[in-house]
Every structure is written in structure tokens, then in C-alpha cells.
Length: 190
Image 1 (tube, helix red, strand yellow):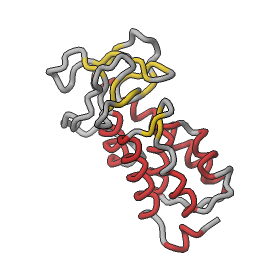
Image 2 (tube, rainbow, N blue to C red):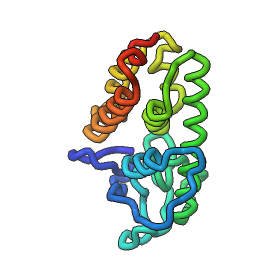
Image 3 (cartoon, helix red, strand yellow):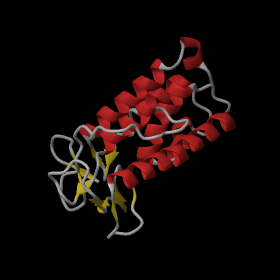
């Protein structure tokens, strides 16, 4: 994924990724996930490369996304020629977010952190964008305080070696959400 000069996402071929407000409709069942987390990731990832750009719920096709092919709401495509309906893209998004949330919870428990659901949501968005391995890096394998983690989140603002406005903003939002979710004592926890 690349970004134009204004920080808007583009696929590897320079085509814009639709990052506008997502189409509204029946609420998709997100199970134990926060609907706010799912909606946040939708707006940050965009819906992808629509086959019919004039239809907000058009089928989408896979696009070159830096080191992989992605599709829909930034999920990994199964092939470079894959297409999905809007409903399929939502289902894959939810399954992927659940997998990342589970990974964040496992690391919380492994390292003994006291993250509540809002802090877990912030870190799930971070991991969805960067991968679960970055959580271990972010926490320094459980050695950083929550306050240090909140500051470190801000450093992950580059793609392809370039600092990108869209990632700077996303990291600010994730860090603020992570901080807001905790008391002063919880932030000092190490």
C-alpha cells in the first residue's frame, strides 16, 4: 500500500483505495468484537479497489499492497485475481480482526498486562495494520510500561521507508485511545 501526497491510500499500481465513509446498512454480527473497532478499521483501511467505482457496495478485487495482495478492508487476498462481494469482505474483516484480537489478548496474558477492552481494541487496530509480531516488539516482550507503550505506538508511522501522514494520524488515534482507556496507575504498570 502506498499513499499520495495527502496521505490517502493507493494500491501498488497507483490506484486510489476508497477510504470514504463506508456504506451503511444492516449491522453485521461482530460477536464479541466492538462494532466501533470494526468501523474504525473499515475507515482506516478503506474498502479497496471496486470493480464498479460508482457502486459503494461493488465487488472488490485484489490489489498489490506492498509485500502482499490485499482485498476488501485490507485483508490478505488468497490470490492476485481474487474478487469478493461486500458481504464477503465484511466477513473476512471480522474473522481477521477476531484473530488479531485473540493474539493481543494472548500477549496481554503472557506478559501480565492489565489492558481493558478499550486498550485491547487500540492494540488490535495497531496489530491489524502491522501484524501481531509488532505487539511483542512494541511491549519489548513485556518489559515496557503502558505509558511507554503508548509513546512507542507513535513511532510506527512509516511504510516503504517513508513517514506517511495517514499512518501518523492513525498512530496518534490508537495511542490516544490506549491512554484514555487506562487510569494513571494502570499507565504506570510495568
